[in-house]
Amino acid sequence: MPGPFRIEVGWPVPSLWPNARPHWSDKYKASKKAKLEAFWATKTVIPPGHQHDGSRMKLTIEAHPDVTRGRDDDNLVAAMKSARDGIASALNCDDGLFDLQPVTWGGLDRGRGRVVLILESSQ
Image 1 (cartoon, helix red, strand yellow):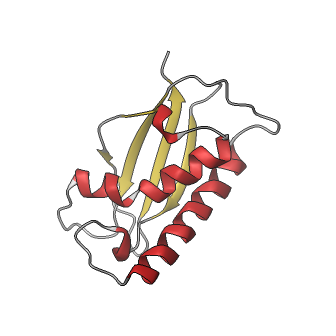
Image 2 (cartoon, one colour):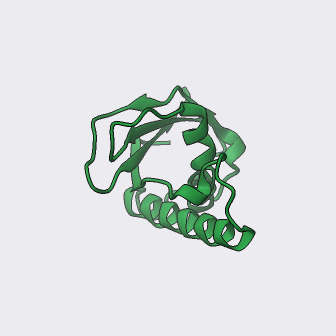
Image 3 (tube, rainbow, N blue to C red):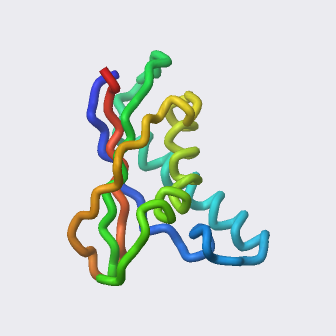
């Protein structure tokens, strides 16, 4: 697998965070939108015709929040589940092949927030 690939998506909406208690339809819509965003963000960075070879991949979540409020990395990982599913779908593989690395916290991205998912070979 060539790479690393840097896949940039927006900050997860509140209904995707595990401590939120949204209506099931709101969570479904947010999950579907996040998955689709990550799918297309992945398709734009992988080479045309790329076929995943079934190998394990390291996945690092680089967070750029929009405010300086403290955040839990485990909640961010949970909020990014739909995005991980979208990446796996774009690569035509199972997200069980992703070896999650510790979350890294980047600088602020005032006004919008974003998450960069860095995907690279585990070898």
